[in-house]
Amino acid sequence: MKTIARRMFLGGYMLNEHYVPTMEELIEYQAMRGDRYADSVKYGYGTVWFCLATLAVFFVARWLKVITLWARVNRTPQVVPKKLLALLRLFSYPRLPYSVSRIVNTVWTIGSLGPNIMLFIALLFTSLYCWVARYYYSAPFYGSPPLALRSEWIATALIPFVFVLGAKRNLISWVVGVSHEKLQVFHQGVAFLIVYMSLVHTISMIVQACSELPFRQHYVSDYIWWSGFAALGALLWLWLGSLPMIRHHLYEGFYLLHIAASIMFIGFLYYHGFGLLDTDLYMKITLGLFGYGFLARFVYMVITNVLFKHRAQLSLQNGFVRVTIPTNIKWRPGMHIFVRFLHIRPFESHPFTISSLPGADAKDGSKNNELVFLKLLHASSPSFSMVHMESQAPTLFAPTTACSFLLVGWD
Image (cartoon, rainbow, N blue to C red; front, side):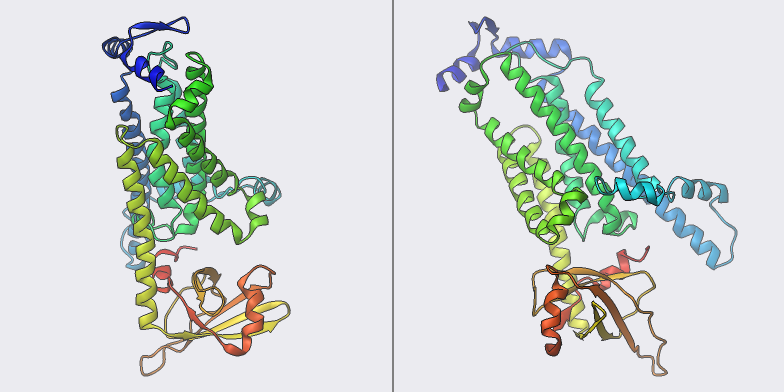
């Protein structure tokens, strides 16, 4: 097989009733059609610019909201026209009727109208960017099909964004002022686009390969095939396992499987495209941004628990676990906090909506508040174990308390 691959690289002969060109002939053929292999990276750049433009739209919308609230509080004339704000609300807030969304959400998590409009625009952009160009396939032995290259770079360029959107601490939340749980609809939508483009890439590569030689000869002679299939398998699990009908059955096991599949996906993909044009750059950016998320969470956890030490009071009431935490921090109605139970599951943090209102300030300026959470008992959740530890009053970490107030205050 290595001999065949070496001869194919040299070119200038007939194989399987097809002419195998020399490298000079191959470059001339691709240049004549305007789809040189080295130029295919432009589709990744175009996708990145589209994503950055989308973030810019959300950034502007955030500051329009800030300016409007500032003008309202200070009783100054409105800078932003009211009709423009009303139009933004019209395209942002509406949801499907509950009778419809209840059925749809069993298959696909759907939020308000605004995010779904943006995701539809992204689907339209990627589809047109991939399919409108003139050439789909190359002649046998004349290089990778243009369709596969376009879809490859579109999918690769989206990978850093999907990893950032899935992290609790991420730069996108900081830029656009939207908490991470509200970004999950974009995380799932962008993941679908990656799956879509990856399948287009895989199928078109297989079609091209089978037009040249029996597929088995390609598969056993080049690592790029098995590494690509391994990455695609992990990617399909990441997407299918995230669908509500599967995720709800897995409950907390979903998190561990999701992390494991993410590591497998990025590892196989790194190997699959190692040294090929800009692939390494996208992988390094992805790992860097994902590492930032883990580091930021750790720093917030340490800072918060140095400044605030919390002990919980647990009680069982009508099938609910009531968690009460005396604290001197402040919050607003509708916020939630991530709690880590050191005596039960020290490596997991779970979101709890705050069920109490902050108390009034004392005369000496100190705070005397109580955080109250209610958790329905579930056989596989931390609250199931909490009942057996009620007498121990375990110390609780609230690793994202400070950041919750910064990023999760828009519910």
